[in-house]
Length: 595
Image (cartoon, rainbow, N blue to C red; front, side):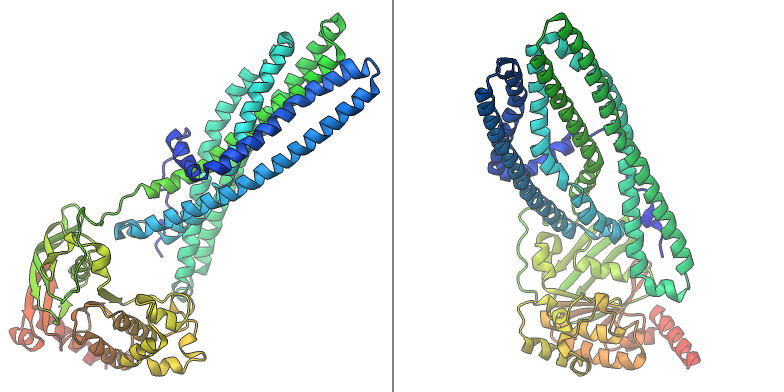
């Protein structure tokens, strides 16, 4: 297995990207009413919280000092009532924002999934599926707390912090300044911790993505792993990646926990300073006991928001990396898109023409060089040649999975770049050597290209390609669950189901890329009968290394080094005794010796 799944492919960033923050919270816009309702509830909680120390001051300095028990009882009832209302408002605001947060995560995950599905093959060629899965699941989940805490905690805590500071300064500016004396030191320490913490959480997310990609790849190729007895080696790699993940998590949490420790120390020292200085003012007669008690309440109300805001920023640093990784993918533009003004492709007759086509996957490294040919509707064209000669590239250009570097590809006279991708690909069918089966029933897999097809149509397609007999012999017939990637079926059975799927979709242009190379000769005879049924009435391109399977093609194009070296029927090419003759005789000799 390739081991590029755990390479480091992202740079560490040392600062919070403000653009990412604004972009992330733009998802709150559709929920303005819910946010406004939450802000109102927050205002109620803030007013009650700020009023409590003042009411306590009033109770001590006025009612208790004057032994007014009735007034004290009334004041106690009022405080109980408003605090009960505050508690209910606080619970309701959290519930409201939790619902909003869940809806936003759903929206982000849908946007990301839809965008990834539109990306070109070049994107998937360079990224393991496990890393993409980590973006859609892990990174999106990490954003959940950000949305709820930003509204329910950040806004009220910020307002509370400012309001408490102002009230303390108004009550007694000397004591108020003493309460704020630790803020400069706290700010310096938090800036240092923020930078270190952010880098370590970025490293953690990359390690987690690497492990996810490796596990996905390892289990996808478990047959190869076991057949080569590579379990000990893969276990070592897994343990190493797991250890790296654990170590990165420990490093990240060390710095995250430092947030709380630093704030707690500053809180304690600041409170001690206020008590010391407040006691001196009390002895000097500059303040009353109720003033000191009220100040004590406000000290807690001042440092708790500092603690919560620091925690929110810590959470932001921890999870914003996930947002950056998500937006990094969402900012990737597909290489293959509908050009402005692209037209719907009308029903395809099947005429295909390559005009001086050259193509390079990488700049100036051409895989095809000035390829030209014309195919009439209904023709079956075989593409043969050595591995890497450019056969699969040709059929990929017909479906416009890639765009030509030079020249043009025409279908029924339309340049494939001038029509919409959906209308073009909807009229094509592709079968490859590795026939993909989706989890679900055989019936569902056959009707994949035509979801609205009834059971009768599904069965008719299966019968036409000789798949019906083996399907009904299965325990649940057409309702048999094939498991992931069709693990319960043989290669030949998967090919027959794929043929039925293609026939039911009724593509006007059919591409068979090594469709029979992975099955035995006896099964190939059955599959070939199904293919012959499928080829009737449609243009087809057949790629095959078994030259015996292409001898009935209308024309054979022999590809070598990105160019068409020979073209003609099987008998004509043999008579020329050129490259096709050499390939055919070499294969015939190999099969004869094997027999």
